[in-house]
Each structure stands twice: as structure tokens, then as C-alpha cells.
Image (tube, rainbow, N blue to C red; front, side, top):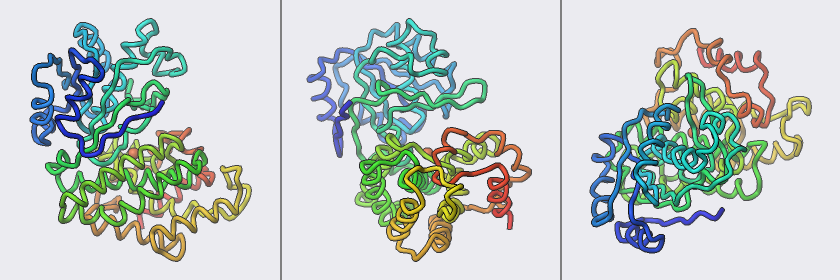
Length: 377
Ligand SMILES: [Fe+2]
């Protein structure tokens, strides 16, 4: 499916979309207070004038299955013919879930979560407008959902938003810390995508451009934001989303979810806790440790290219560069300072095996514990 991208989306762009798609009623998925604070509410209200809409915002961060089902019920009664998701990653995911569950209502939604291949119908036109620059969810064909505390990633081509509208004006209300967290999520996604077993030339081109933009603009975007740096970072996050849409993420994401669930560390921060360590670890020296069939030379070239992008000499310098980068944008990486303790078993038990197998270097349980322990010193 070809996705339409509208840079610097305006209210009149949105009005044109309504006309082009003969839209009569809109199902609007938004956050709660962030919808107002980000300026998204004013933006939507000026575009939507004269068109009926139903808004759904009563759901928690990190979408829960039961919340999505409530959304589906409201959606079904609404007779809407287009869905607009305007907000952060959770808003995007929730809109994707509601769209796919309701258009495949002949299948039990929980069965779809467990086996997304059952999806047979494409839903209504979905317009995704991210207000935070990070997850890249607007560019992916998967949606995260939690059921009984377990995280699922529902993946299918029909989940991908049809239209993406980017505009950095919505991200100015984000705090310094959350801007840093979402930027680090994008940077992690781009780096992980680059070395991922699932990487292709296409995904690597997206990832490369995202890394270059983030290294150049993220610090400025966090410390002294302006339109140029905000625009660059929101575009980079979109590119990183396009990259992982092809390659998926790897080890730093695979082990991050427990830091969020059990220690309430925001996603981007949780991923970056171990990304520097994996930057060094992922230089593979022995063929037996290699997950990627393209071999040791391919891996060596990847790490060299990533070092070049970070402007460092080798993987150890790369690790230090990433740690210092986090420090510059005031993101703490020390487990003890973050109050993360007695975590080894918790992390190992909750690791996402599929994402871990996408890591270029095999990570055994013993090696994972060693990486985590090295963070203590
Ligand atoms: Fe992420």
C-alpha cells in the first residue's frame, strides 16, 4: 500500500482530504489534555467545521485491548466514514486497532491479536497526524496492544495509515524530557533498523537519513527548540518509522518493555538504557554468534557505516558517544540513579523473543544478564 505524506499539513489540506474522500462524518481519536495543549484541538476544529464528528479519547497510554473494544463499540454506532488519529504513539495504535477490529468484526478481536493473518478486510481511510516526534507509528503497519499485561504487536498491511500529516507545531508543548525521550526512541529505532536482520537497502536508506537528521538536530530540538530543529526531528521520526516498518527493531527494544512496565520508564528512555551497550556488543566477531545470514563482513561494514554516521572511530567510541549524547539532552542512563534494582530476572522473563532474534548478534540469557550487570558499575 502506498501511503500519502503531507508535510506541514494545514487545516485546508485536511479540508481537501474530506472533499476528495467524500467524507461526511469523522471518527476522531485523540489524547486527553495533550489534545488541547498541543494545539491539535484548535487545528482540527478549524478544519472540521461543518462536518459531524465523534471523538474517542477515553483510553490509557499503551493501548489496552478492553479500551480498544470500547472504542470499536462507539465507532460502530457512529457511522463514521473516516478516522483521524491526532496525538502520540498510543493514539495512533488505538486508531489502527479500532479500524482493523471493526472492519473484521466477523472474527473475534482477540483472535486477530493472536493471529493477525486472519485480517481480511481493509478498514476506512485512516489519517495519522503525530503530535510527538518519536514512535514513527504513523508510518508502520503494526499496532501495539496490551492484554492481561502481555504486549502484542498486531501486524498487517491493512493496519498502515493511508495518509500521514506532519507538522511540528504540535510538538512545541512537549516538555524537554518527553521531547528527549521521543527523540531517543526515533534514534534507537533508526540505529536498530540499520543493523537489523530484517534490514533491506530501502530500510537502511530511511534509517541513515533519520540518524543524520537526529544527530544534527535532536540536541537543539531538546535544549533550545525552534521550528527548524522541530521539523527535522519530526521528519526523522517518520523516516525511522518507515525504516522499522520494513526491518523491525532489535535487542534494545526487545528488553525495554519490562523497564516501562515495572519501573515506569517512558518508552524512548527505556530503549536507550541499553542501546549504547548493544552498539558495542553488536560488532560480531565469531560466525557462530551471527544471526544475520549475510555474514561477518556484512556486519562489519554495517558497524563501520554506523560509526561513520556517529562520527566515531569504532564501536566502543560509539557506545561512549551515545551515552554522552543522552547526558547532553539530560536523560539519565544509570540504573541506580533511576531506582532500577533487582531487575535481571524480570527483564529476562519479559524479553520479546521475536525482536531479540532480529538482533544481528545472538544474545543468550547469560550474555543478556552480563550486559545488564555491566550497567551497574
Ligand atoms: Fe520504539
